[in-house]
Image 1 (cartoon, rainbow, N blue to C red):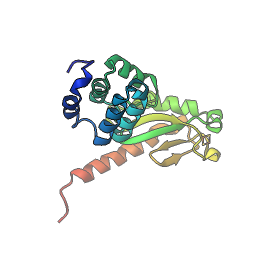
Image 2 (image 1 turned 135 degrees about the vertical axis):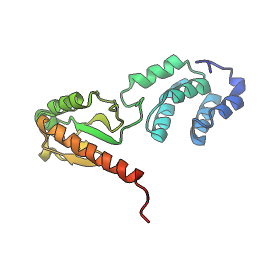
Image 3 (image 1 turned 180 degrees about the vertical axis):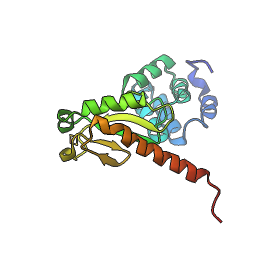
Image 4 (image 1 turned 90 degrees about the vertical axis):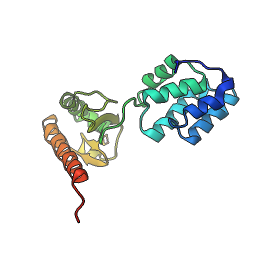
Length: 189
Ligand code: FES
């Protein structure tokens, strides 16, 4: 499909085409705003809904939004890449959140973050090539006494030194391998 923009008269056809790509409630939300001619102002809200549903915004989602909302694909892509809270890749099995709150920052959170980036080869907002880890940052997670801390999934780790990072990552890689082995093992009779 072309990047943009189709006549608003062909909504039923577009809606049918993207039904497999977006859930019913999001299509209804777009339709409602389209009819009130406020597609552009609702662009961010729509992208949030899609990310909330799928966990990230894929290229197909961006194209669907451009087509359905009659907004140029370049604009949709620009918004999705500008705001750091939009994720353009699927999240990894484990989400690492580096606490950059004051207590953690003062105790060296940035060095821990740098070590994570070096080990994983990714920056904030990205997912490792093997799909195991995604890296994000957050503010105080409420365990300042353990600063500097990171969260992996819902588990808190701290106080953490950069030197401890490789071993910690290895323990999660081992877990991921175990999960994979368990999932592919034939069912016990
Ligand atoms: S600042 Fe990091 S846990 Fe409070």
